[in-house]
Image (cartoon, rainbow, N blue to C red; front, side, top):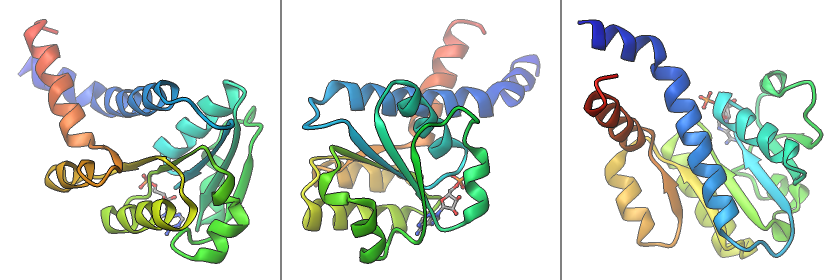
Length: 168
Ligand code: AMP
């Protein structure tokens, strides 16, 4: 019971931090052709990734279809914001998707993330495309298509297992 309460209390912070670290690690692992990164979806995760990239000196632009979402960025965020629907080509063109070394796609919808990831790969040729997928089965399928995926359920399960092994 005590373990479950602790997991509940800390789960959101742990999971967001975990996904964030996982994305940052993958971006660092790849050799970038330049330092321009586009983040799509300014939810808590997208804002946190964009803040970290900006703090790390990267050129970053974050896109969201909801203008209010940008309020989640920290006051020190030094990158650009673009209000628009990232499934629309004119928005990706305006964002300079053809110049991006990496694109991180973290909207709240798996289908949207997959659609955008494929558009970015096929039309703009970015080779470092990372998409969040909530559905683990889809994440496995897309890894075969050279789209790098982050699956919160998988990361959370691994983290919870490791916390349980340590006895919290
Ligand atoms: P969250 O649910 O906190 O991960 O936030 C997801 C964010 O993605 C929200 O701020 C949405 O407005 C944003 N979003 C969802 N679909 C799109 C889209 N097609 N283009 C741009 N932003 C989107």
